[in-house]
Length: 409
Length: 90
Image 1 (cartoon, rainbow over the protein chains, first blue to last red):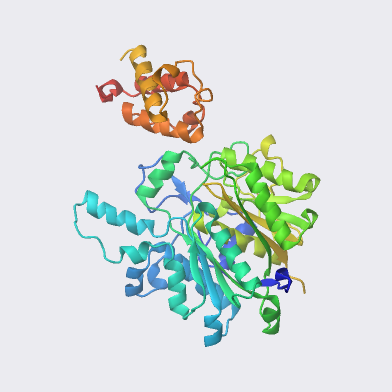
Image 2: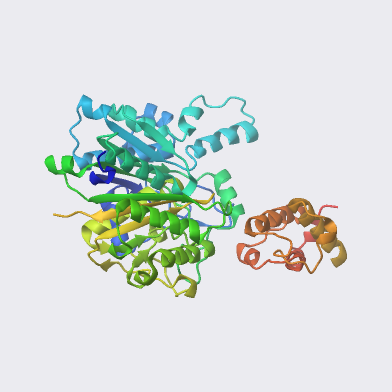
């Protein structure tokens, strides 16, 4: 039997819409400058929540991307997924054939799907006593709406599905798509995730969890006060490196490995053991030694519990090499986009490898002895790194880690 | 409402939300002794906020680790909250 790891998987297209802008260039420019997209919440009338700030996609007009009928069919989260996919497909300069459409997979991640649509429907039903609910509520709300939209838009007919594992959703999705391509089940894959979280009902639920910061997101900083919610979408085009090279495609880097684990510890509290096992599994799948990793895009939510636990997990896996690792949380800039987080961070990590610039942890003020890693405080750093990890650790204890390798000329 | 009444109501809320016997919940019990973790803790605060019609800020919530912390915190909020007594359900 052929060695399944013998096929190397390249990323040849990226697309992003986020609080840092409406495309991948704007996203990267903000990351490289250490400029956060966190600002006063606009989607919700002020004064109803304990937290006033968020990382929203600003100046977004769906009519710039979809006609009116399409807008009626697509929740904001599905729109973000489709917009990111369009950019990634354009970026990869894919020449579609019927055969390629049949052999292309789409795997997306979303934590809450079209919950803003659902929230609107509930307001109409329960508060305004309007007894009829929009008949498009179900197709707008389903978590696979973005994947299905991308499939319909491009006539892609290969394996298409959606993974919902809270904050790990899109890392699980990208990891699954990576395995589909590496194993030969799919010749190409679109993978990523999208999320739109800003409805009053959902934000009230986050408020009750008491994990959202009242000011900003300061990962690994001693005075961190919690996460900042974000939204958006990010998609990657994956294909075997040989076919990417044969068609002369731009290669951003390789997905080298994928690892996952479950804590089986607590429904919301993180465990360093589970996180460490997922990182080790990603390294083993990529056949990498810890010493080959130079950068980690951390889960780094800026909750007191996550950042200290993640630091412990990184130290467990990397031992003495942890002192040489650069680790940052780009959530300090694009916010925590839940099911889209892993996809946004995959693009951030790939562009960091491609541009030889490591994005910083923004809003950082003071060291925390419990988070004693090199967290690239506030300013990006020029560094050529061979390999990187991107961590996602979800509520429910579900961990998913991707390993990336810099493109070789 | 006297401090004793406040304490009794808080004990009752903790016992009922956590499904533990009322007599085990004393003013001096810590959350740790009662097996109350962080998620249970925010659930208790949710019940207490609803019962006394107060809002407990996140920063204050983080420092609540015992029955006495809850009682003292609510007493302070009720004092600050003008008309707060009137808002307490009978």
